Length: 147
Image: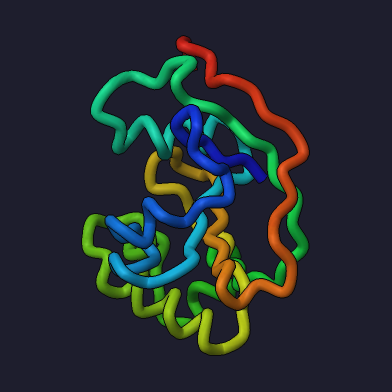
């Protein structure tokens, strides 16, 4: 799993999602960490919302974690829940935030979700407040300017 953050930011910090909210959490909700399964997806997700192009001011961290996850990239699961991939990547975050609250309350520690920035790719939303284990940082490197 890969996470991209500005230089100097703890890669396990959930402060940004707590302050500003995200696709799967409302501002003020604690301990929601966003990551991607592929490096290029993590860069695309951050670049989508960054005010300036990514550069060496941004760092990429490889994380290792073992959590119970709800896989919303599995079409069978999505259909059983009465959802659609379009709803999961659309601009309206009402349903995705509701779904994340319900997943957290149902005992899931994470969700695997489709990327809104890179079609066909996967992100991971970790609920660190209910996680049995914290992610482990196993590698880091600056983001390449051409990424």
